[in-house]
Image (cartoon, rainbow, N blue to C red; front, side, top):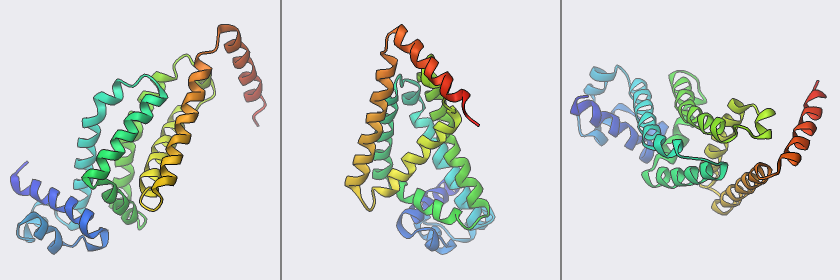
Length: 211
């Protein structure tokens, strides 16, 4: 990638952090990038396409940076620990603010909607891999919709990231509650074989009554 294109991507991210989606004009982005605004249209075609590329590139880089840590997770509490560390880093980098702005822009449809959904899906796929691994052999895996659970975890983290901006204490309590749920899952894992068989039987009975 050329230096100019990278500067434009960095300028787009900086503009979203500092001025929001409403302030992401060609002039503002070009000023942040330190280049002529005509280069936005030369390299990316439009401001929207530049924002789309910036979102895709930044998210892919962050997922790659965390992939090894996610691959080393062996429990739900471990996944929450990685999520907490990720949140702290993203907040320090200003990426939580970028996420909020991309979500705001995505409400109006168009390319930003599709791109934001794809960016979130990159994280959800990684979380699904972790859940499949840590829940293998667990009675919970017999009733859990793992892809749906991965989406729920991803959505929960996004919600907490945004919620913390208005109620930090509330967000911390919510994270603590999720950790308590993870402890309950671990308690199920620690049950002896007889108790696990009994639990599986109860699960089978409950699920067989679903409409």
